[in-house]
Length: 188
Image 1 (spheres, rainbow, N blue to C red):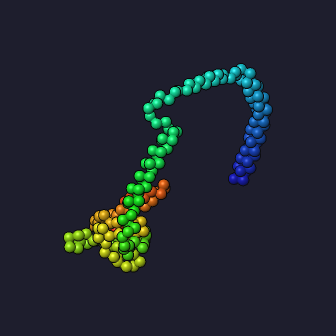
Image 2 (tube, rainbow, N blue to C red):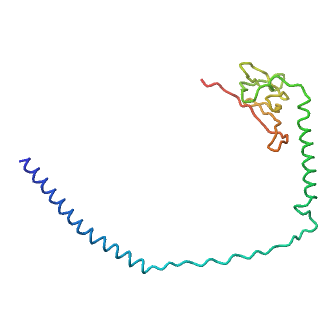
Image 3 (cartoon, helix red, strand yellow):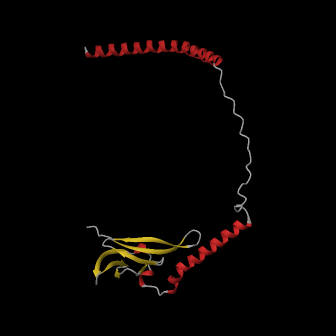
């Protein structure tokens, strides 16, 4: 009995699928023709509306009214710029000169990124940082020098060492910049 129901159901499903396929084929042929006709009608009825481009603005040159001021492309302007640059390089040289004249300290041989602050203490009322470099421990006080960029310690707290470095900027001028060494706590 079950087998009969299955066969009946399968044959009924095939017949329905065949009828549906024939209906779609018949509709598809007429549907495509109608679609093409509708597209042709729309194309003939549609007229594009393009706004005309406006006329370009006329350039009206302005005359240079600041006769008393220095012209931007004159030799006088260039002379002023060169004077300003030479005074900057003199002040820049004054910034690095004392660093070149003093004796180097031991911690100036290593870059800051290989140094680690591992602790701090107070010695004779003055803060001291414990800095580790290559498995050696150093005591650092304000005024000591660290790193390869003429770094001088300006402040020591429980968690960081603040220093002032002297480096060259993109133009080759010597400038000061701040740097810090943070306390490195060992993870357990």
